[in-house]
Image 1 (cartoon, rainbow, N blue to C red):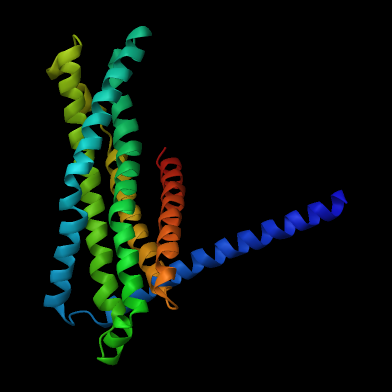
Image 2: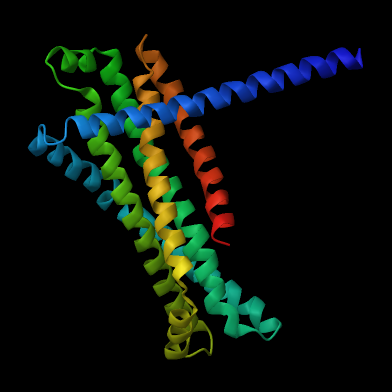
Length: 266
């Protein structure tokens, strides 16, 4: 009995891993198709795709600024105060700047920004493409000789990517500014010394980590959401479950990429 149970458990685990591996490979293949279409139709409908690109940047980037700014201010103020109180107890307040750069700049800012974009823009992309697919609008584009990958995917892919990179940088700046102001108000640290320590604590690897995470997160989110949107074929009722699955997969992939990049630049 135990041997049969272990055999069934190993079989289920193996099938689950194979399914996940196939899903990742399918998503990578979808991304590769988008890149080939981008090269093939380069210059086609540039005015229309540019307009969609600007609209996507506005929706994902500009309209998310208020939410990202709120989280950045709260995170910066709390972390600066908590970090100062903890380091003051052990007599290492000079390490506050480096702690903030690592925790906020390299870890919290990219992750929180990605989560905001996933739930705000990722869900909208999946539902939009899913409903277009079910209602036959994508098939209508193909009948008119328009590549849906070029018209629908490329502007959203680059729009989300640019927006995520800019939002991560903005999160870092807003969080550090809020933390400096909070520390200046509630502690005896001087602003000039704190800013000097922050500037001198920044390393080249910190910029690379922020840009790399913004780039990888900004590509992963739209690719996963677009892929799930194109999987909606049968009925409208399939769109909400696919949207939920897309958000979960985005979170899993973002967490996995965050760990990989953190270890790579440690």
